[in-house]
Length: 165
Image (tube, rainbow, N blue to C red; front, side):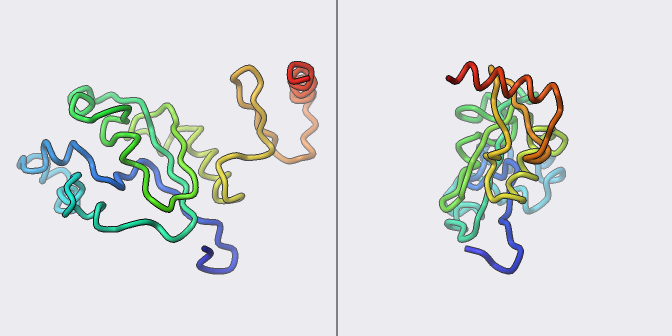
């Protein structure tokens, strides 16, 4: 679904679309309410929480979740892989187009190079999977454009083609 001309979709960085166990555990605490305000208290996992009332998205949405934590207390509460604030699983929402996981903590997602690259790619192409990106032995090599002629890149392409054939 495209809301208007030039629309390429939207992205979300680790939003708790299904709520967060952290809010369930600490939402009633005075300090939590002071730091997160009234909106923070609405992000629990219960069926009456704001995220769980929203339903599926009806537009192209790309979601990026982190799977590293520097908050060990929160991570002991959260089930599964998490970024210290929300589990990877709870960042998913019905109707989303794509979901990827990056090795980052929640507070640093906005500064993570992979997050920035993937966000730009999604907004430009409608997908996190840039056809101008190849993987060579676990290292991502992104072309700036289809005409990229760096000698280093050309060596990598030759090596990649040799390995793949």
